Length: 293
Ligand SMILES: Nc1nc2c(ncn2[C@@H]2O[C@H](COP(=O)(O)OP(=O)(O)O)[C@@H](O)[C@H]2O)c(=O)[nH]1
Ligand SMILES: [Mg+2]
Image 1 (tube, protein in one colour):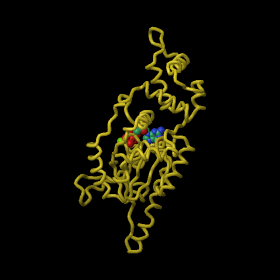
Image 2 (cartoon, helix red, strand yellow):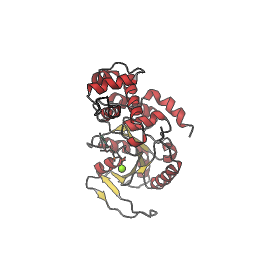
Image 3 (tube, helix red, strand yellow):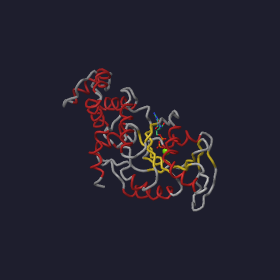
């Protein structure tokens, strides 16, 4: 796979996020609930530094609920508070405010003791492309974009979005990059539509998807394609799916390109049900990988 990780981009993004971090009390790290490992930026802890953080697993409507619960418990065990939401439909937004208040409760208490009346909690969203940052911001904003203008020390006018009087969110998210040097991570990001189709080979992606389903969701593979095993004879599998779905070239042959696309589209379009592509049991392996940065 020829997907690259651009150190230059990352350095710039990191500088920008570091600047914005000075303005907020808490960071909302937005990730895709289907990819709680692969959709995280591997340097996020360094970038966020000591800032309080809430991890938000977005697109929960697309992820396997059982795995989402496991991930929330897993992050909890690591001392990272996590909630699952669906920004698209605006589900779970209250849990975001509630969790943010709880995370910041000790700080708010300290302020009160010193006679300072705490204002709204200020937050910013960070995350890799396509996890739903803009969708969440728009959802929270409704029509409430607060034009608070320039803040001291900020050259660019930052807008704050007010949510239920208790939360103010920076209207520009911090964009970080995924790490897709690892082939599996690249495939998973492509299968969920996080990276463009043009950067991956569709046939390899479809095969990766089928093998992933065979290992992790065999029942879905059976139900959708009538397959119990994928095995090594991929051509035969493609013939089987191509015939079932009548995907032929004008010459009457199975159109393998179309079959590849069809499989990938099936996975993306929820026709195979709610899927999670990263599992808590893989955590140690991925962690060992990211240390090599
Ligand atoms: N199903 C579903 N789709 C979502 C959700 N949040 C965002 N999306 C979709 O994900 C895509 C990327 O969202 P966007 O907000 O542009 O991501 P950004 O690049 O992080 O700003 C869009 O097609 C959104 O409609 C969600 O909670 N559920
Ligand atoms: Mg966006």
